[in-house]
Image 1 (spheres, helix red, strand yellow):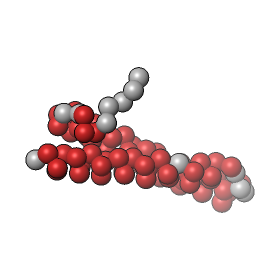
Image 2: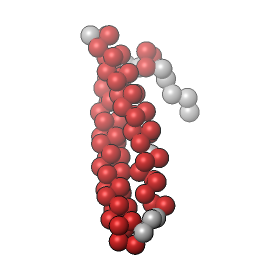
Image 3: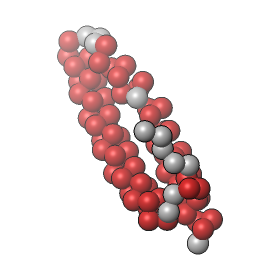
Image 4: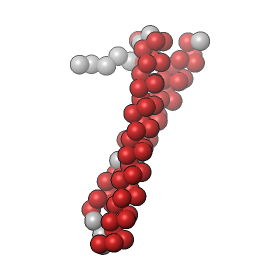
Length: 80
């Protein structure tokens, strides 16, 4: 399934996508924060665990989502 370009979407679709992406990004940040805290706790108590690397490696996903949200905001602003 090929996704449409931002310029081809309606304002309603853009707003819906922005809202969904904001919620999912927030949940991802919360999950990564909990995972990081838990992995640090485990590392302090038992020693190094590869689990520490997971939240750090998933930070680029959050940054990409934030970039997409900004692009959607700019597209909505350019139309209004």
